[in-house]
Image 1 (cartoon, rainbow over the protein chains, first blue to last red):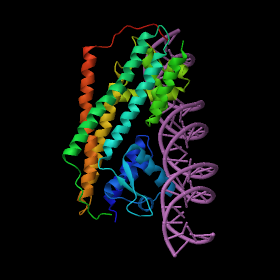
Image 2: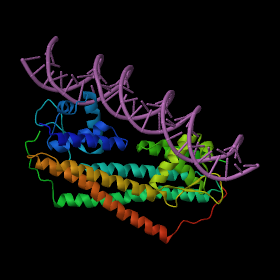
Image 3: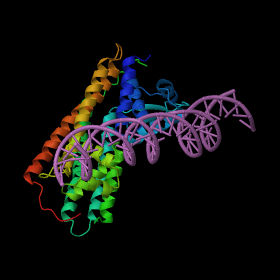
Image 4: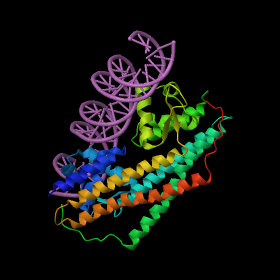
Length: 163
Length: 163
DNA sequence: CAGTACGTTCATTCCTGATTGAACGGAATC
DNA sequence: GATTCCGTTCAATCAGGAATGAACGTACTG
């Protein structure tokens, strides 16, 4: 059972991810699992999203790497099952933070190699790098705050039989 | 005169932007103008970055829309000149913030249309949207803080004859 | 030891957005 | 008013990553 509104949400998440330079299907998979609220198999993803097995596998693992999904093998079962973590956004945020730090370091390093006589330009570039660095710090702060909220009011685990 | 280190920086910015789903050339243009520190014409961009006039124009205006560049016509001159604003990162940040708010609204709206019996899923999706909304708020706060710093220690306007 | 059911990999195909470059239009100059 | 110099637009091309699906490896099953 898939209401049109749910499909729309899944599609929208796909577009959103796409517009951010990430695979559209990854967004759809995440949306699907957020809606599901329970573990789903690769096969279920393929059926629901009409994507190939390869895509489902690849993108699920991609999301696993970012920490947005968790893979579980319920009891002695033959299929992997995938589950959106309680607060997927938090994981995504931390991925961005990591990327920012990497960028900051790279830019700072490059600025360090600027030739004599370009100190002002160097300064401007270092300021630019600092933005990334300080933003990363700020985002850590932010993540910590969100993390607290989650602890304070943990996800209710009531599941509805939705599918 | 373009040192290799500077070219590397420009290229890196291009890759960075590319990896974030934005036109590579836009990143290069911004990098070029940050290094320059002074207004540059479209023609200069074309020469320095080896890109077409169309690209230079399109991407410069794109950056203008985000607020990272400013277009000036020095005195009675026949060419536009482009200039990186004092704190380009701030402008970029605000663009992201805007996008986050839009996403939050869109997702919330879609969640509102979920059918009966899917309240839990609806809740999860709304939580997800809230993340975007609250992140946007947080980024505003952050932008305000950066803005203050800029006021406190304004950009030094010393220019070195670098080119 | 077949036979089956999964998940992963990888060469290929596909698609979309970036980039180009020629054509256009407007403003300034002579 | 003709010419030149710009910036913009847009149709066509290009490039690069996403998506596919067949082939492969592995772990169960009978």
